[in-house]
Amino acid sequence: MSATAAPSRRVNVRTPEVMERVQAEVETHYRSHLVETIRTQGSLVQIGNTTVRLARDFGFCYGVERAIDLAYAARRVFADKRVFLLGEIIHNPEVNRQLTEMGIISIPISQQEEECAKLNNDDVVIVPAFGAETKLMKIISERGCMVVDTTCGDVMSVWKRVRNYAKTGFTSIIHGKASHEETRATSSRALGDSGNGQYLVILTLADVDYICEYIHQGGDKEAFYERFKGADAYSPGFDPDIHLKQVGVANQTTMLKSETEEIQRRLQAAVEKRDGVGSKNFQVFDTICGATQERQDSLFGLLQQPLDVLLVVGGYNSSNTTHLVEIGEQQLPTFFIRTAECLTSLEEIVHFDLHLKAEKTSYSGKLASTEPVMIGITAGASCPNNLIEDALVRVFGLRGIDEATVRAAVGL
Ligand code: SF4
Image (cartoon, rainbow, N blue to C red):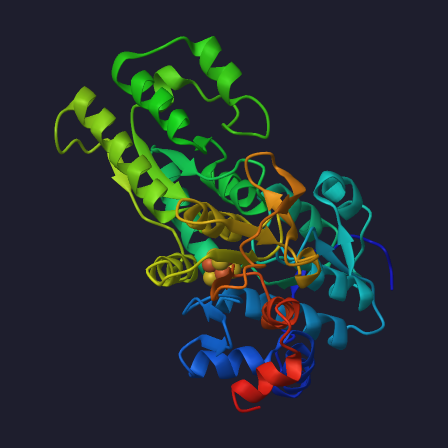
């Protein structure tokens, strides 16, 4: 095949024959019969003085399942071709490791423009569930690559919304992390088809308060640029004196719902304070996805039960998982663990500290108590059930209850 560039081709790898085999493979890698059984029995296992409660909803969401299926299908359909992945398919290191072992080549974010420019029309590129920036999609298209696009439909709904803001002259205020793949992809769509649209990415309530003050009483433009510099947090040519006049809010799909709602409320109040109640200069559309919301709501439900400790299983760079940890931390000792191996012993837990932004080891007597212990377990949308099973089995194992006993307790 020639290396000459030609327009990219979106390829359909979801043929019934391929998908049948892919789903069997995916189930082998990520499924847990034990976890599924526990779910059907009320999400609770009690053996002796150890009780584990699972959240009602946790783990893989529909978007993640689809992305993984498509990545596996791409590898199978294009067995003789180079198959590349833009960054990570989802934010779970175990899943990404599995794809690497299957020969899928991940291109790190920092090298994507440079590396994609070297691809040709015999190469396959997988776009992850978060989507990809328009400039990257353009390069891939120009190189004539075959594209397997796993972008989640919920992410595309956000794109539609911010494109619409751009079309009507509104600035998109995006609640999210500017460096996150999904938010980068969304920001690029907020430029609109003309490329002249405007956006500003805000992350914290302190950010929104700063913007609110600027909205109703103006501010120091240079200080504004300084505050939001880095990671493309605002669009080229963004002028806060001009581009905060008409604002529309959207959010990364995986943010903390309560925080997003508060941000929307404060921004609306600021615009109305400036332009009058019911001003048409403010629009909002909640773009938190259903799966994120379900997992957060389920955790709130779990936290209404008596628990001594909460384990949240998942990749440390997973946004929706991080927010589950934030919810848990407000109520009880919560440990964000990547895998079961993080439970070194009953007293020693290796976990990610959101405040330090680093993994650390903590010593807790909670699991070691000889009194009855109640442990809650949940996981974000990017965590497969087999990792949740590992954590559950490990907890019981450390408490002196072996896996066979756990299985027998639920009738397996
Ligand atoms: S977390 Fe939501 S937006 Fe992300 S892949 Fe899952 S369903 Fe889609």
